[in-house]
Structure formats: C-alpha cells, structure tokens
Image (tube, rainbow, N blue to C red; front, top):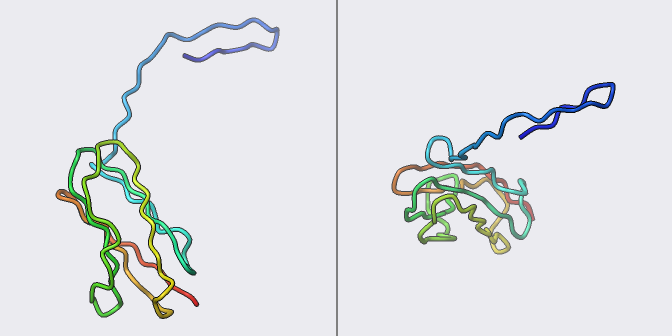
Length: 112
C-alpha cells in the first residue's frame, strides 16, 4: 500500500496489493565476492525448489581443486558458502554451483 502526499498536504492511500516473490528461472547465483580473492571469499545462491547443491572449484585445466560445499538447499533460503583459498597458488579458477535442475559457473582470480 502506498501513500501519496500532494503539495497542499492532503494525502490518499492506494489499495492494498499482495505480491508473491519468486526466484526467476528457478535459481540465482551471485558472483563470487571478493574477486580477486585473497585468503577467502564467498558465493551466495538461492533456489526456488529444495534440492541437493554442490559448490566446487576447478583450475583452468578443468581439474577439480576442491568441493567446498555439498548439501540440501532449502527453497527460498539464501545460502552463503565460504571459499577458502589460503593454500592455493595465484591464478584463475572457476567456481561451479551445481544443483539438480541447474548449473552455473563463476570465474574468480586468486592473488597471494
């Protein structure tokens, strides 16, 4: 509901409207933060339907470096996964967030 105030001080309220929020496309993956990373970073995601999700990191040759998180993601709950990179050499990596109904990759740079 909105309140409109006119220049003369009079006001009026709009009718009440209900809004249902949904995750467009069934999921949303936010970029890895910070990028470039030093020490650790995080990736956030949210899914529309409850499902198993795995967050993995790959090097530029496509080799899996680490599975940083694997578990059930609840519908509509924003998950924040920490990515620790303190023992990794500097370079480019790919963070892959993979669910039962989607997969998305984010490029990240690690600096020492």
